[in-house]
Length: 520
Ligand code: KIV
Ligand code: ZN
Image 1 (cartoon, helix red, strand yellow):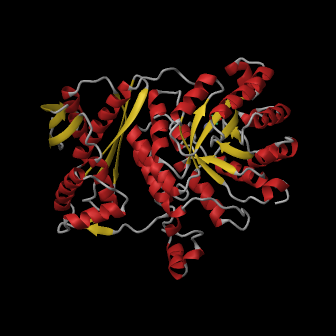
Image 2 (cartoon, rainbow, N blue to C red):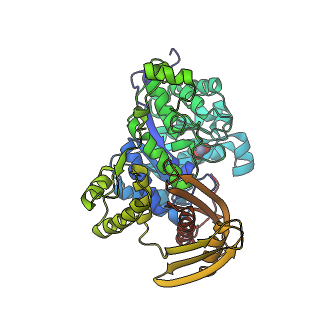
Image 3 (cartoon, rainbow, N blue to C red):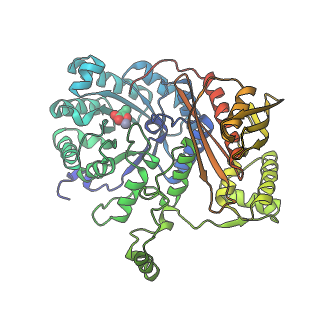
């Protein structure tokens, strides 16, 4: 621990800065709509995230609106908006954040020779001036300003130290050193952070932050090395979501600190028992499945298949478990309700799961619960979560009503669907190459569109052949992608619901044109 500089030694709190909604959302296909972002923001707040990077307000009307709406509903976490070094970006971020109880502007510019020469086409001294101007501008709006040197790990160290000193002088209180392209390795990153701490004369006036991408699979290791060198903020995403190979995974950093506190003597505000819930939500919203062997949140992370391991775990769990499943919120699925459960038990269970629905929504959800209970004997928490998710779609312009499908080895397979578009009942029967194709064809006939199907994915919500299928459909139109979800005990009904959900999201996207193209 000898390399931690003195001024950082006393403070062992690591600030958790979540960028799932900004850097995570930059991952192709991971777009989220406003409703989903609001839900995620609430989940991140109850997870104990210190700073939520809610978006890049100048990037699109949608990003502006989500930063602005999230600012209104979150009080415990700091809400952060990203901006490039331009005044227009910074003013836009400030406007989006105006209702936030605690707000931060995060402004960045690239500092590596490669980025300055080819991307920015700016001389280093002009970049230096832009840093001073942008931080000063941001400080005119808010007290809490973070500055990032994009491609920091491939920047010249002397230049970096001079620019960091100026950013702090101009008022930045957090200095983030991104490994933008996931190029560094732990020893090199630790040295870089140590050198910055030792060489920048006013560094004690700022907190150093680490922001690592996972191109070499080193994002978490690099982040922890940065912390050991004296960084006290870590930027990360749930499930490691992010561009290319992703960002450092929040759950891995938090549990590494918690589990190996003997050599990582730090603490965070994260309520680790809420990790699994947040992870599942992000996977469900984005349609990005969690790989079974993913650390902390993968389905097999706490599964013991080998007989010798099972025997050891039964005798004493710590033989093969370095942390408990409960510590990350993994509990055995609870049998919650059945066919005979009444409205009161149902509403109470929804409240326990954190859902407060209005009277009409409860009524609709209860009706669907009864329908589900007729088809499925045991209803688990996961079933209710899928069901309530469906009920949250009351404002959708296109609504699923019914589906009848002819499937099997003797074609042609056909689907007969009834949907509602802006309140009008529509029916169609179409053939297809298989029942899913027939179902999607019939929807396309009723709502013609040119969106391309990029992904069709099915997973079982719980175990057993009567489990609900949760289907994800990803559509792309004019370079914009959306993910739709649908759940039902009938996979084809779930597929139709997912496709319709994606179309509704596309309709929302169409209304929100991006004002300008961005590179970050
Ligand atoms: O990776 C990166 O450099 C970024 C910055 C905008 C902070 O995401
Ligand atoms: Zn990044």
